[in-house]
Image 1 (spheres, rainbow, N blue to C red):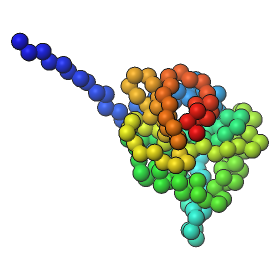
Image 2 (cartoon, helix red, strand yellow):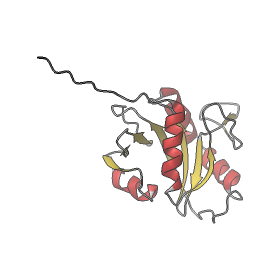
Image 3 (cartoon, rainbow, N blue to C red):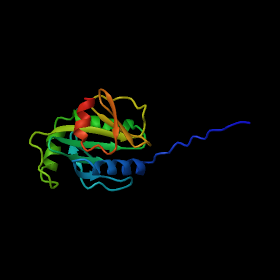
Image 4 (cartoon, helix red, strand yellow):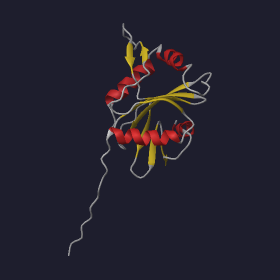
Amino acid sequence: MMAYCLVVKKIYYEIDVFNDLRSFLSNTQLEVLQLVPPGGQAPLSLTFTPNGAERPKTVYPDLIAFDSTSIYLGELKPRFSKADVEKLMSIKSSKDAFKKICQTLQNKGDSPFPDKPKLVFLLVHTQENAPQVEGIFQLVFQVNNNIIISGTKKASFLKTSNSLNNVIQIVS
């Protein structure tokens, strides 16, 4: 007699990542200004001049949020995306992006805007074995209601955590 074991892996689509992130963010203390669903239109844009470029570039981040100390810019996909890394690194290395982000967000939202915010870049996906990227934090959603966050270190926490900032400090 043979026994078989059937292992069913959930296939994550971008809408699943979006819904998991939306659910997670609803438990945080972040003021979410923009969270764009797949195929959706982003109302907020960021125009900046990438290093070495002669012309400004306009991007539409999937996630724009802030709390009392930080501004969060993020991109989400079902799997790690090199194009999203390049997009975030272009913003991060630009000389004028931070100032333009602060100007754009200054009068948005209901919460007080932080005085001297730090800018936190996030890649949101489900690929546990994704390469680390210096200067970008990765939120990796798992089927078991955990999230792995990686920076210079990795940590796992439940989706019900209420402070993204505290978790980021752990992996910094």
